[in-house]
Amino acid sequence: MRVKPYTAVMNATVLPSLPPRPEMERAFLDSDASFDGLFFTGVRTTGIFCLPSCPARKPLPRNVEFFPTVKEAVRAGYRPCKRCRPTRTSAPDWVRDLLRAVDENGAERISESALRQKGLEPARVRRYFQRQYGMTFQAYCRARRLGRSFEAIREGSTIDDAVFDTGFESHSGFRSAFARVFGKPPGQVRDADCIRLAWMETPLGPMLAGAVSSGICLLEFTDRRKLETQFAVLRRRFSLALVPAASPHLLQLKTEMAAYFAGRLSKFAVPLVFPGTAFERRVWKQLLEIPYGETCSYQELARTLGQAQASRAVGSANGRNRIAILVPCHRVVNQNGELGGYGGGLWRKRLLLELERKPKLAPGP
Image (cartoon, rainbow, N blue to C red; front, top):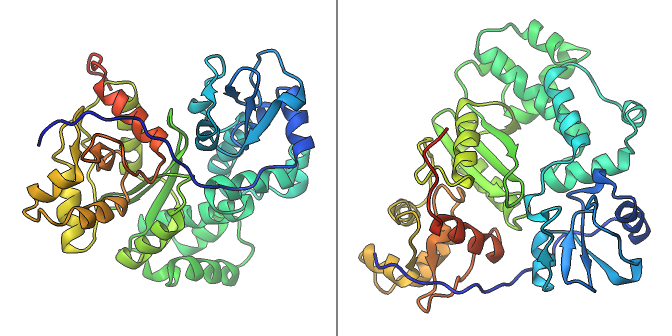
């Protein structure tokens, strides 16, 4: 396929609501890192946008506007701050601490009073998890415990041990919650599978990954508008529950993604699983053939598939790709060289293509 130039073309859509302005102004003026990821600040006098925690000199509040995402700030014409690097946003320390506590103390319930003892306002915690993970913190904890019990039972643990290890107060409560999530009682899952979910940080924002026993089946930016639709498609295609859980494929993916963004990896080795229609699978497999650092047009992709008049259908299948970056739909551009569409936002598509055009570093893990 012929290599195409590309032109950066930005667009965006309206995304989630912000915290109250007085709360954001207070957090920005105090450089409160606990609000990193909840909003971004655009400084009108400099044309730069920052994290709430940015250590740079603070402007007057009247010269600041607030955005829910990097995409919205870029759309408004702001450039990322070179000091706090807002496009490299990662989970705040308090979120990392909570996730670590959930993983290390599987049976421990973290109540709202316990959150307050840690200096965290429950409403802020709930807002962050609902926004980033699509569920409240308590729902995340419950799903994580059930995911851990699912893996333990599959590996031979008794149901009694699973009840004890996940902190449920009764067998009936455990069985009921387990059946609601997995669609079958715990005694019937020893040979079953589920879609294990994990959230990972990247230089372009957090991503949600999913894996079944045979490989990666999902990788999407958490602010993608159609993420809930992708969940519904996954449930329909696999007939499996989605739960936060660990997986060797997810660990491998995190390692390879880190190497990719560091410029040390141009081809992923982690196995992929992408059920779809016959046409969708043909398109996605052809996407895997587009070389790293190159692009092709929707029209060229259609001709390669032997269906020269199907460029619109190719574009639609491209948009339904559930495994971003690994199945490189970002390498498909308009015939005139402009970027075209991208579910993760055109600003990300531009940066991914720029990353892949840079000289690669020496190979590494």
